[in-house]
Image 1 (cartoon, rainbow, N blue to C red):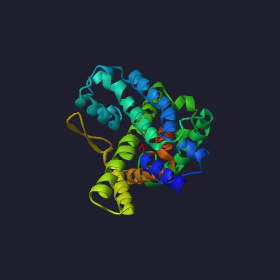
Image 2: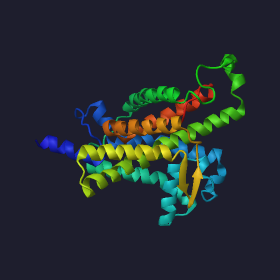
Image 3: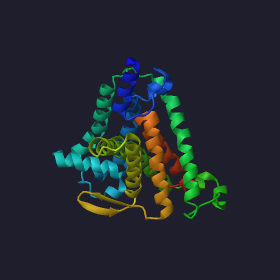
Image 4: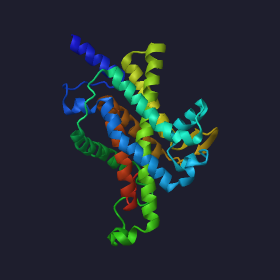
Length: 293
């Protein structure tokens, strides 16, 4: 009974709904400390990559959020509201992720030990979990440009297709895709679902299953909508042109990520989101039409 109550406290504090065999691969890699250590490299890559592609972002006060990850800009906006300078928000935004994951690790009362050897199977798992979304994107976005099988251009030697401009755009897509994987999961899964669960279950008194259903659905709809219309820096912006297929795909992707978060935790979910965007960017370059999320 004591062991079961301990598992209940752990899953409640981390947002997971599933417990695994103690100290198994699935149990270890679901811990917040694994999410923190695994994603540190991704966050560093996003920060450095953004500066290399848009050096002006460090000195301009978030003038063009549409060229970056909107969820990251929201974190920056919050930090600016608190009192940080625009330059400092580039440093403190990753610290928000680190502090939240450290707090979850402390409240989960799980072991702090990390096996670096687990990072390779975690990466393979994230890539495999991204494949269903690739297939879903191809099915729901058939009417987009270059839909269906590769065109005759795919028969041209690859080095003739990938010119310097294409290479730069690929790198932009990869960098922003990694940032989206971390900060969109932070906002829409780690934070928003938690707040919605508190609202529906603790304030409104809904049953747990109903609260979970409503929280996941609302977070998925908002996740999809923010790719098309969003508010940042005190202004409204238009993002990706709205189509029903794109909106439905991203809503289903939001539900998929929420289910993944409930089972495998933040690290695997953010990693899957990031690797999906990386694969989508590569396939997009190779003429396929895959919608980023």
